[in-house]
Image 1: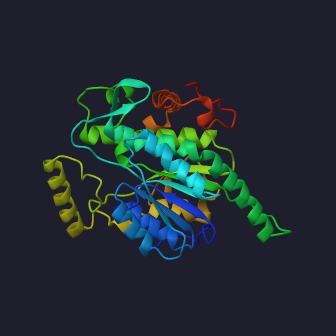
Image 2: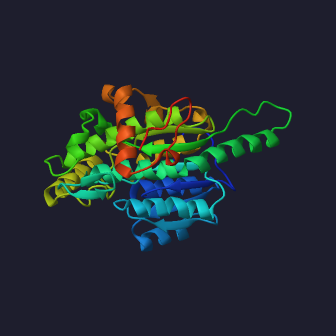
Image 3: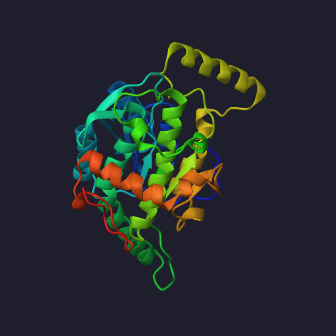
Length: 330
């Protein structure tokens, strides 16, 4: 397991879902969580790679589920399969993401002219999956508290919530929320679209943390800079070559991270007792840090949530709405 601070609250009998985990940072995170003894659910599009990783993970009971994040029916199907096959979900790591060099559009139920692909995968699919799994996470958090009480009978065992960890990026600091920019034909692509999607990850996390019950926490993080991942595999040829060159130079100068190093913070957030009750925070290098001012904008958090519900065609019963925050109307 990667050298991250503290012990693990995950162990035998626990279940963790890591999206986008057939390679790169996601695969390293899956390996780390499997090393705790937990059952890991691996997700991706490449069945061969996914099943190979499952076979390599220590322990038993791990499983692979395929789902294309550009198809929201498949995203819901992924959630429903996990709900059907596992009676608990102790941790959800939203790691799946993409970087597109050219602008492409994805069909979205609530928008006639579609949504930019990077935003659809990095935010909307994550929003859809998390909300679908929220009740199971909440029930598992309550179950974890009961289990902790039984282990520590006669003592104050404290709370041990289930966790949602969403992988963002410090590139969110270069973005402002502009929902018009991701709708229909337009010029935004590449780093601009990616930064906006990563800002959406932080805005979503902060709003989610307010809405979830106390039995679930939600945090997000910057994973570091790791050109060795397949994040830019769908980008332009020039962008891909530039990213590889940056990685080669970075490895020589020590300014980039390996995939294993980039998995440290999300592993920490998923498993460390040090953050058992921490929620609604942005982390870098296993430390809570201030996000961009645009990410702390409460109105922007609500605006993104409302738009996500509307665009995905969800109704009130399909979204989280807790802590006095009413679920937005579809």
